[in-house]
Structure formats: C-alpha cells, structure tokens
Length: 146
Image 1 (tube, rainbow, N blue to C red):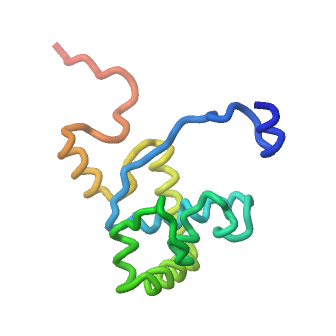
Image 2 (image 1 turned 120 degrees about the vertical axis):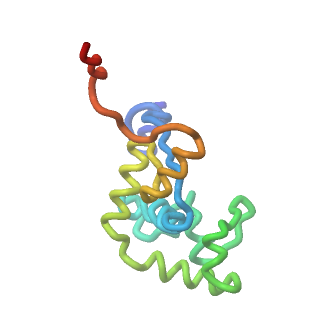
C-alpha cells in the first residue's frame, strides 16, 4: 500500500471513504452530472483539460472517440441527429460555466444520499417506494399528553 500511496501522492487505504451515489432526475440533471463528473479532475487540479484524465468518458462524449465500454444515454443521444452534432453540442455544453447552485445540489445529494432532482422528483420516489426521504426531526418523539 505504501508504494501505491507514494506513486500517486495519496494517503490512507485504497478504499478509504464511503461509496457515494444518488438517484438522478435524468430530465434535468443527467447531462449536468456528466459535466460534473468529467470536470472533477480539472477542478481538483489533477489535469489541465478533461480529456487528459485517463478514466474519463469525456473523450467519448465531447470528442467522438468510440469506446466499447460506454453506452450513450438517451439524454446525450437527444443532443443531435448524428454523432458529430451530439459531440459538438456536448462540447458546447461543457464549455459553459456550471451554475454554483447545480454544483452545490449535486454535492449535497452525494453527501446525504438524497436524489439529485427537484421536490417533485423526490416525491415521486417516495411514493413509488413508500418511504420518506430526507432527515426527520432530531431526538426522540414526544410522548402523548395523558
């Protein structure tokens, strides 16, 4: 483990930290999440350009490089009538600055395990699964008055 940490300038165990995931409202947040994920190595200062990160889908989505491991999502396919139009549309989308609200919403959803979407999306999930999402009131429920 020391050799891996030294080679990659990191600390701790390889699987340190909790796995994080979030259901995503594809109609609103699918491509926003694509951008968030593909630009993370740039924001972290690991690479200068997103295509420089070797484990990124960016080269496929924005540059048109085919990869048998990547299946295009319907949201990406809707960006144009053909592969060239889609990659150009996606490239233009990635080049737009991400709204801070979107970044905060995605980060909050990942950190809390809540869905990435609006209140309607959350209510649909609660209804479909017959569960309540989010945090309840702190502490023990009050006893009923006699």
